[in-house]
Image 1 (cartoon, rainbow, N blue to C red):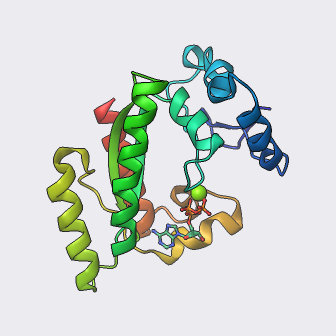
Image 2: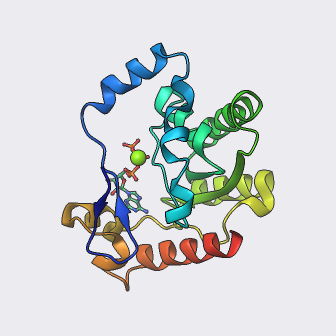
Image 3: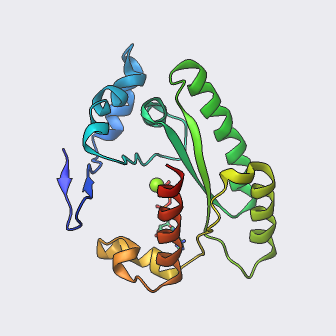
Length: 181
Ligand SMILES: Nc1ncnc2c1ncn2[C@@H]1O[C@H](COP(=O)(O)OP(=O)(O)OP(=O)(O)O)[C@@H](O)[C@H]1O
Ligand SMILES: [Mg+2]
């Protein structure tokens, strides 16, 4: 069910608890991997961007999202273990591309939760940029209390505190995304 928001040109389809059983149901259906793709087929006519938020694992919900998408945006937390997950994710994207959705491409890698004071964050950022080159967004999102607070006010960080470093970074990320599309 599409819901309006208080922001012009932004509509939401919220999740609900039943989504947990939908995951089980989807994996039982023969066409279960393309359920979302079929549901979203017409959306391109009404929306310039459709973002599908995914769980961190490659279950039926994520497979559905990858089967429906043109591009994958990968937020990477600037920590060592995030780097390991990234390699697995690239493998999953390859798999879905060859089996379900030849259009699928990596749209970009976004470094997030970057703590400029730590050596680890700098090392992981360097490593990700070395590996993914141009795919990495120029803007990195810093660790920002405002970003963590915004959801409890039901607001995007850009509306909650536009002058915070987190909002500024997300704004720039959005502009880069528009520039790439
Ligand atoms: N740049 C940031 N600075 C500080 N806190 C952040 C930042 N980004 C996200 N957070 C906080 O970290 C928590 C997890 O963020 P988020 O829900 O976006 O991650 P996720 O990987 O999508 O998690 P999940 O797997 O639960 O969906 C949230 O409380 C969020 O407010
Ligand atoms: Mg999430």
